Length: 390
Image (cartoon, rainbow, N blue to C red; front, top):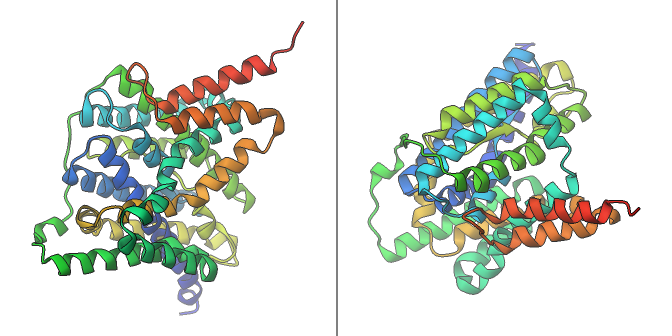
């Protein structure tokens, strides 16, 4: 009993980590998969796939290395899917892009020079691209209030209230408010409901590979995942005294991404913001025992995976603008952080602004999405402005 009692604390910390991470951003994942061409069943399968693979990755890494490593789906990557939209070749090409992203993550583990190349992209440019990608989603709560005030206003008020009282739970409780709105809407309309929609199942898609999906989706998805998730995740863990084994972490997340890709999973990676919930002293005063929180997080994700189909059905049945509003609220913090890092250095401000504007424009040239052109434009402007005159 003396050993069991202390373990309850990191176990609970892991459960909280999974609940907060899952409920705060699953709507973004479903919205992103829908944007690149997935139907309702394929989007539900994608959510199930990333839930299973990141859960298993958490358990494997935390158990093997006895540190509280946590793995998450790429929320910025899901936002990138929304900004990209349907790519050349449709959903099967998007699945092909997910596989290419997995290959690039694995290559990063096997060939350190690739990771060093990504690290050479100025953080201001990478964060400006992310901010531009996130902007349209973050506008959804505002436009939603106009489009469907009765559905969106309760969600926004709930978020604002708990952002003041319990910030960690603000977005999850905003989703609870959205679920109530959906339930009231269904009861009021008397709409039929098929219980089969609640059963989780994997829908596999044969991948196809197109240049547009490679350049416009796979490369930006890889860069966003590395710059906004894996690199910050390493730094956060280091701030709590843990050195994450880089190569094994990239191998596990790369293999996990590959395994989930044909079922619709976009990307898994090291957790960034939510990593602190399992690695901080709040999880356990003894840093040698916090790895239990990592295992608990993974186990909790596996349990939550069972509810993936039900949550996907809720999104499909929701009134207009309600779920996009939740997704936008979930990204406010990430958007604010990206903007701050993008313009923090005055010498990098103009290239960052150009990158942000191109990414936010949503333009597609030669079938390639705005995220790629934003990087090209930002790096070009930076090169011109920073090249010394003779």
